[in-house]
Amino acid sequence: MRGRLAGIRRVLEEYAGDRVSVGELHLPTQADVARYLNWDQGLHLAHNFHFFELPWSAAAFRGSIGEFCELLVPGAWPAWCLNNHDYPRLATRYGAHAVRVAAMLLATLRGTPFLYQGEELGLADVPVPADRVVDVDGRDPQRAPIPWEPPSRAGPGAGFSRGDPWLPLTPDAERVNAAAQAANPASVLALYRGLLAERRSRPDLQGGTMQFLDGGDADVLCYRRGDRHAVALNFSADARPLTWRLSPGQVVLSTHLDRDPGSPAPGALRGGEGVLVETDRVRP
Image 1 (cartoon, helix red, strand yellow):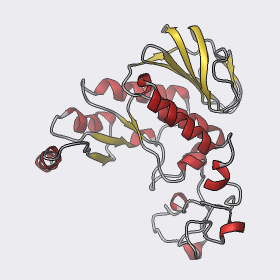
Image 2 (cartoon, helix red, strand yellow):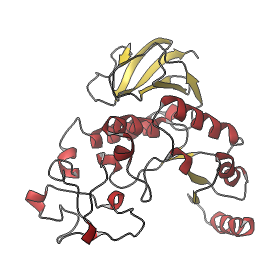
Image 3 (cartoon, helix red, strand yellow):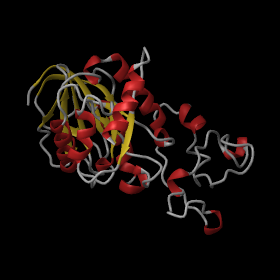
């Protein structure tokens, strides 16, 4: 296997410009995944499937992220994803309150985020009748197609197809579709667009350092990014206090998209809310 990987890497290095190898590695431990990244003739990036199997808790994600980052040698680079075609969608695994927090988590971690089709709309698994099952391993619900437009306007294929797709669309396709969310400034799609725009424009959110912070509540995950940014994520569906040490902090973006940019950093988070904050100084 090492010889094959080294051969792939040599071919990639023959080409100028951007090129990258990404591994889909389902391995027993995070240390096993890290070995593929710590070898300079190995993979550039690897999907970490341990992320998919965590319980939805701030402590579990802090532990997993911290362990994986510590396993990587200088120069190795993590990749993060929370949805794919083999696992139930995040909205189904954890609940609707997790969707926006997960979006901010992926977009603000140190590393490269990967998104799965429909994740940017907050799609949940789609019920599949027995007579329409395609995958014998039961993975059809998370593989249902994206609804691009309301079925009332685009027909039964909801813009994905002119006919009836091979798998059924979400029952919520009239409301949960790309066109409707693009027109809604408070939608999950609007949140992803805002997060990715902030990531592109703020170097701290790309290559900046990362350090965990104490947020004051067991359900809140906090971390510093670079010198001037911090993130707080409430994993609970209920409101939680936020008592991190900022000096002073201003909101860049809230997952709820209703906090004014430049407003003071909040002292509490609503259920399923996260905030990205800019500050002159962040203390552990």
